[in-house]
Length: 259
Ligand code: GLP
Image (cartoon, rainbow, N blue to C red):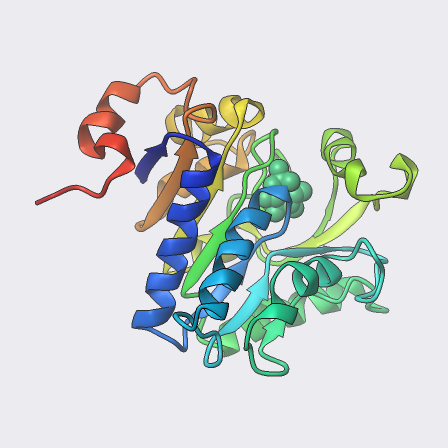
């Protein structure tokens, strides 16, 4: 894992947006894996700004989002499809049909999940997978005890995840109990993984992900098995890392190594 520690959330989001933009400029037809959540709003705002400035195009890109709530239709105000339209898709030049999310309102969610995994494979797999981090160590909606080999499937959300996401819904009881999510195996199949976490609330999960044992108790620890995982943190999220001095020595100030 490459650990880049930036001074604050703004500079961390700058870095992640910059890495995504660099990748799209080098390989415009990249298949992106996209994430939702509060963390990504600043990243998408920066990508939109670059597009509006004429320095970034999504015209040849395709994307697959990590997850969607079961029972939630794309036009539902709290759907991840709606989030993606508002935060990114409506403001950039992705081709019609190039962006996919699982259909939360599919009549057969299990078949939808299997079909989604097949669609990712048919697209040649994910080139760059963007990830946030749950306070409980989840990635996508792969909650603790998820199989580290899992593929896209239905997961029941933990009470803590439902509570964390209640802020996006009118009432806490409106938060769905299940989601369709890419599996940990799906995520590990991506060519490159880019995880962003900021804030003290992510510090414990960040330490478990990077320094803890490889364990389904912290699904993000599976990224220890990935050959090309980049983790971008702010100071607060990095505050519980025991090997902090080492990460500073390898990437001082979050900069790439000068070889
Ligand atoms: C959500 C999403 C994840 C996201 C994580 C963190 O429940 N399923 O993909 O990365 O939890 O969310 P936030 O960025 O709002 O803290």
